[in-house]
Image (cartoon, rainbow, N blue to C red):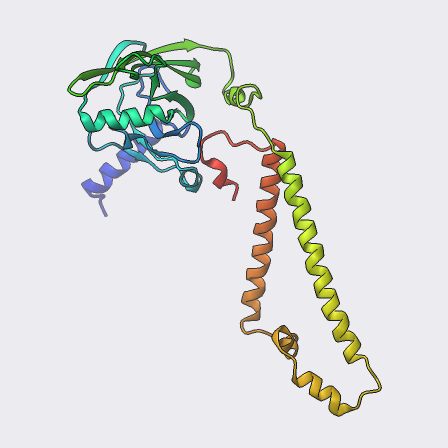
Length: 328
């Protein structure tokens, strides 16, 4: 049987794909070639004094193009409140940008009010480049009470990126050009990019985020000790009440001078949890299934406990946002 034209084309395509593999850059392998596109992901905004309160970055009236790509990072990203959206800012690997335009932001009364509320609450935002975070503040509140425009919005973002050969090692964000917020005004939102080589290896690119002075974790030992002592006190109190009740029951059942009629009357008057004494040794339905569920639950509970303990002592760290879910 002679091969058809369709089968021949499929064989040739597979052969070409194997012989000449495509060299496509992606965030999955963290390797790029010169002038390859690099995605800047916008994530969330929220008040600095309450890190648990976060919103989508575009909940503030920043201008953005329609049809932005969303990135699904797994369960850990969802639990962390992350929602990565492609900013569509043109970033190219090893390509410096002196001054590029993001958009023109037209202000009205509603947008000005939203930005002013965010600035008064000290809102910060978070970006990601190649799984590396960048942070910054939305704006600044001037302390001059005589000024009519105390709220200013940062309109220029300086992005500094360090790379080692074909991999991104470090990112940094600084902001300039604060502009007052006035209804009817149009602000030019701009950015600049500077690439710098470095000798830091890819395996150590997260060391800067683990530096204690940079990202200090304060453990409230007094609160932990207080909670621990409270649990011990309540456990002891419940144990004393339970042992007192059980001691009376043991003494009642151990009496030998009472006749059988009195004992049966006492047993018939039992209430509450004592009524299940006849069901203790009765096998439940679907015994194998409930045994498997209980065993698996115990393993998961032990795994969660070990992960929490390792995270507390600082020996566990996952190298990208929301990736703690891969452990489970």
